[in-house]
Length: 223
Length: 224
Image (cartoon, rainbow over all chains, first blue to last red; front, side):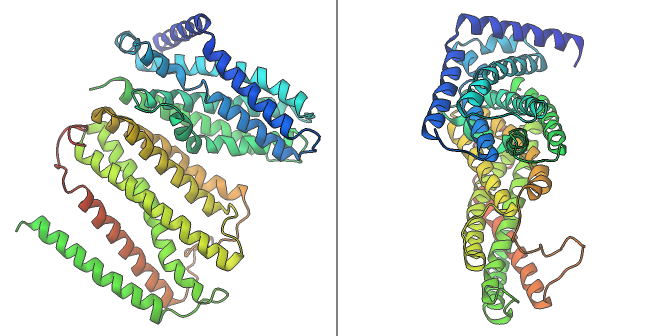
């Protein structure tokens, strides 16, 4: 990434953060979605002793669907506000992509910081390997942020937006999702798991990032 | 009558003869397999449709790359048709695999690595076709579908190399097993190879019949 792209991405991130502070409903909807889902899961399973693998799967299902309530909005909101043409006119593709990705990453970190402690309390989970859990969480959110940003750009202009990004996202994110569940289960005391899974997640995140960077140019520069 | 019509007729004729030959071999020539009996007949349908499912996915991505590089409307039509057919073949592969699984292992579904792989492929096809259906503007539809097709290709190494490490498999060994040798009755192998060629020709015929109305040149989105 050149210094001008880095500077451009920083400016896009700043713009996104300012806009989101002016319009906190997007954050609110995502957080409330996570809280509602978490409450449903916790209430329906109260009093039951769950296996670490099931606890891990439930956590990632909650995080995935809650993130889908906000991770894909970077371009959709611009489209609705009719500001996308201006951004296309003044913003370089890579700066816009990485700025939006960083914003989505910040959004997802906020979501995880809100959801995970509540999940651990409500579901009475003991973390046996906090380091592995934290790294897994970061690698998982990285993948969701990258894929969510590109797929959000793809879905711009669609007749039907509701649920479209979730449909597009699931097959792409499975390579992150399945190792994340295995590693999280291990961090919840579910036995040993190969740390190479974490390496695989990071590698796949990198591949997604490079792939998104190459393909985004074709979306951004129309003819 | 121009040469393309003759080529199409030749392809259809060859496919029909080969299909009849394969059906005859499957029902009257192929011996029962050890441990599977005559259930092995399902494999002569299941393996070729699974092969075509993967072939269609890779071809769709190849033509998607041509759409992005050359804005080629014909390539977009081929990519879309390949994905449509790939989806149908994936459904056939999933259903035939589930029946084979029920008959031999006692349950329709157990997230065997290959079941998982074909299911993820079906999800990708479904997502691709949903995306195309949701895009009203033809030029944008061609572009975003091509990008999604290529982006979803990034999952292929995962499906091939990682998924098998996650799940225990009851699935029979592939024709070419891990030691690199072919462990199959020669009659079965010949029938299977003929069935693979036949299903590939059926796919090819359907593909070109499906895009016959589209001009070979033009800008992506003009005609699709």
